[in-house]
Length: 294
Image (cartoon, rainbow, N blue to C red; front, side):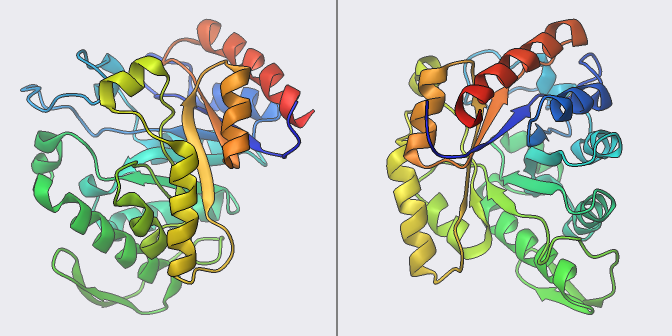
């Protein structure tokens, strides 16, 4: 079934009541998974004014998440080859100088295993608590990513924008990966393709089953991949964009379709639950992945 070699990963909200990051990471690597991703929210405002795009009721893991860089460091420390990724980290809620340091340190200590899934966020009150207006979120995200790239690649980095402004500075360690960890854009609007080509390294949409597509609007993945590639070519970017999709369930037909569309990484969804619940699911996903990469 399938002829294209694709990477398979796992994603779980790492929380204070879920299986520990080190236990999950060991299991993931032992069963042949390429990567492990953790999302984040620093907090959820109790007002709950911003509606959750995923439905009516916000799951409690959204305000119980570990800091992803701390949790991923724990995962990286007990593995050798497993890539560790943010899926996603909210750039609008992080100081770019500090985040550049955190990401570079994790990439350095893990010997170049960090993947940086990023997004602007959906909760207006949450980002406003961090001093960012919802209307400015994409401008802020762009400048912070560009500023971090300067810090990762320059001996004396500086950046002067409308939202990020600093004179020459020194910051080490530099990431092990040349140019810094790959940055994957976790969004699916009509603007995302140009943004990927301008300042990211790939597309990172969430998988929509029928219920999710009904709640937030269906995404045409085949068309999206074509538009990513078109924008990539127009921007005269070298190589190929990374095409990853997360939140996929135990559905072989869906996996086969996603690979056929052109995704090079399929990331399975795990619940934020204890080891007795999660680890058997990891085994089942490994068996599913084996059907495609034998």
